[in-house]
Length: 205
Image 1: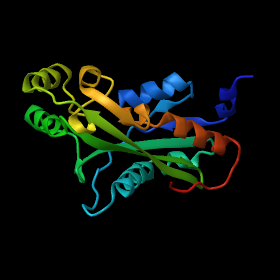
Image 2: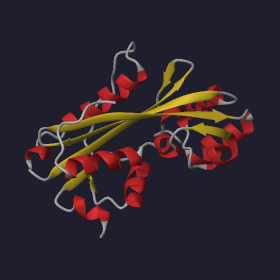
Image 3: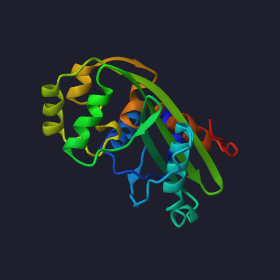
């Protein structure tokens, strides 16, 4: 029996334009479609990282109130941040900003948090995953090459672990690799199973 058949009654909507999140859900085999609505990514500077990602993915889910009126609709939103030495590093504004960010991460370990919100009618699951990523010391030539060739302007921390810089620069990961890519799919699958089984309202981890 196909375990993915439990999701057949639902219209699962991935509310993200990230090709990485789309690819991860496709790899698991979860049926879904993509729908994106612009959401301001603002938060208070004194919020702990896990509260930041919870807040941001909830805000994204709030934009789909009309879709949630449909009885079979399930909304999945996510947000990823990079934290280095206690400071949140957002997406770069341009090539110079990306180069500066990667230079900061070079030769050190940083944290990656991804928050996920799953909503169906009056049920909500909000959770997050946390990983540690270590870069070796990168040369300026390597950083410049990566930024010029891969243009990582849509990525928190200005890098994609699945791209060239991840292959040549990352020396260690503690936690989920897929969380660093932008979606802890093992947790998403687990919570979607809870939803399909008719379990009660979830809570943030």
